[in-house]
Amino acid sequence: MTNYSVKVVESSKELTKKETVMFKDLSDAIILSEFIDEHDGAIIIDVEAYVELAIHNEKAKDEQNKDYTNYVVVDKNGTRYYTGSESFWSSFMNIWNEMNDSTEEWSLKVYKKQSKGKKDFITCSVM
Image 1 (cartoon, rainbow, N blue to C red):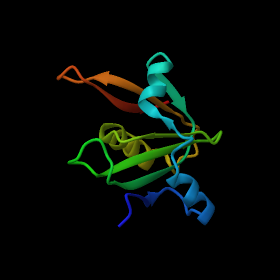
Image 2: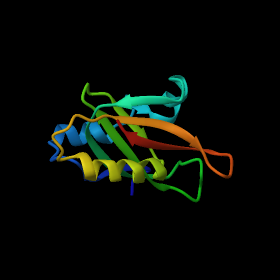
Image 3: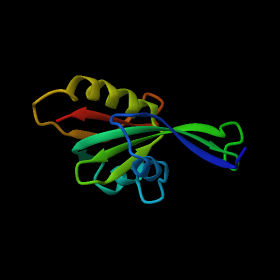
């Protein structure tokens, strides 16, 4: 077993070997929550594709969570954004499943909302 491994669990499109390697390396991808904070609390993504990654990290800060999931959304301009937010992913997949085969132009507004517990969570809406 290695200290760190990444597997593509699901993708919105058939990936080439090169694309698979590119998606598994998040070093040049943008962390969604930080990017939202830097852009007045909301961003717009013209979604082209998505990938779900299963990650195993023996050196994770949280000893209880060495296995986790990251979700990558790709903008039509090639920018990759990623998050581990389940609230975002649930909202995103609902939108994707409805809009993916639509002929209408659409974008994704990604933003944070405050939960009842006063902690922010990431979500999204179709535009």
